[in-house]
Length: 391
Length: 194
Image (cartoon, rainbow over all chains, first blue to last red; front, side):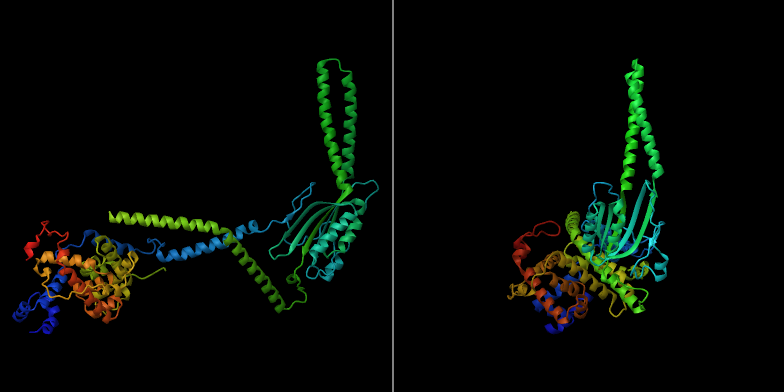
């Protein structure tokens, strides 16, 4: 038997564990084949007599049972769902964070509140409807007013002031303009001409990048009509409303009560000089203090009424028109409307994407810090686990 | 992601329990320590369980399990340490050329196996894997190629090189007795071999 023949049967011989006489004879004379046979036999029996650890026997069976648990009891938070959950969480953080922080991250609006008043006016969602005092119809209002409505809305009855009557006039006017800056300047110029003043001013930018100005103007009562004529020549008048409040009775009442208190004060001053005892003196002084308080309060009320009567309040809402806004629905075809809606949606998408970019950039430092912390924590835990396994 | 079908655990256990020992010792010999071996063997059986329904029986169940075990072990080894170039190893002068009798042959069976186990640990990962599958577990070249996802020629080549490396290790007289003791704790004298 030669080496090739022996090697061809080597596998079989090792499996069988015994050799024929011929094979033994060959091995006695061939060191290489003896080595190969011994080596292979040792390889095949290397782990004979060694036991599989009980811990392993138990652990893989438990792992299989755990893996086979029904979906209801099995935690859904497995490796695969982790990725989807992570993605969902990231999207929620991105969209939610963008929406919540949008106003915070936008540049601040130009709020020029004057010293007096300073009431907060919330930007109306729609243009203000005609008030109870009457609404003036608009020219070129387009989508806002139909011709029938325009003719029906005649000039509101302007409050005819009785001679000596105290009338508080409040006017609201909404204007639309394509030349925002120019018209705003025109308003301010008209105001300056008649010695009026701005009680409150707010200019902000809407989501579609159009600007919106809210102005509360105080106009001397004798110049209100002239001012309103000027205003109607600015931009496109969308809505006008006016209300008048006759406070004559109230004014008279306050004035009378003030006079009464003043008279009372004069008498108290005389009585004070004639006081005999300390007790009487103290009582009179108490009365004087109360009376003075009443006088001050009534004077303040009277001054407030005078201010409102002498200066009418004109609320001006000036809205900037963008090209996409100009759609006359009366004549719009279905195609026009779809196109307009698509343009609006595209603008919204652009806005959302730009807001998202701003949000991501602003959050970047926090994301980086969180990433570093997580990486360090995972490295530390892994190191600790390896150390525990080795010990 | 949800609703993955899994086989009956009992049926799976019955099917693979006969190979539990082989899987464990395959992993032990490839990984070199019992902790990694347990982890890899458990991972092997877990992956086998998940994929059991897709096993069509084209190969033997043992071969299929060995394939999974080999993949798991190689992934684990790759994660632990980068592979050295096999070309470098092939040029390292591992081949024994002389005809001197190997001291390995003079040892008793227990001592030979201890020496063989130590020599196996010294092999590079890729070579050790083919030796474990082919020489220890008795897979054919085709089965080992399938298990390791390499060509048959590569299996033959690596096995050949690995055996030469082992021969060199086992023939190195000095290394065998450097810090080795007998399995029963007694130190063997050099003179006893001659």
